[in-house]
Length: 104
Image (tube, rainbow, N blue to C red; front, side, top):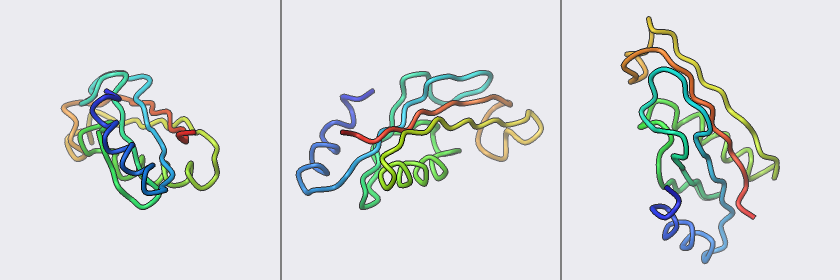
């Protein structure tokens, strides 16, 4: 939820950082976070919120940094087979779509 990460975003903007927002827009199968879950990332590497409980946060962080640098939004798609789901922290296979956009 955006209200949970707003204080961090306000602090980052006040110090002059750029910010990207990642939002879960679709899930199928196992997903630790529901549609609407948000994660904010600053240009200096600070993170607030979560889109997956850890299993894809690293890739989303990198995408946020790319979006901050380019100014272009991206839609990310992550899929995990049932056989490998436990390795990344999911109870079973599933897909997660995350929209990453620069905060303007």
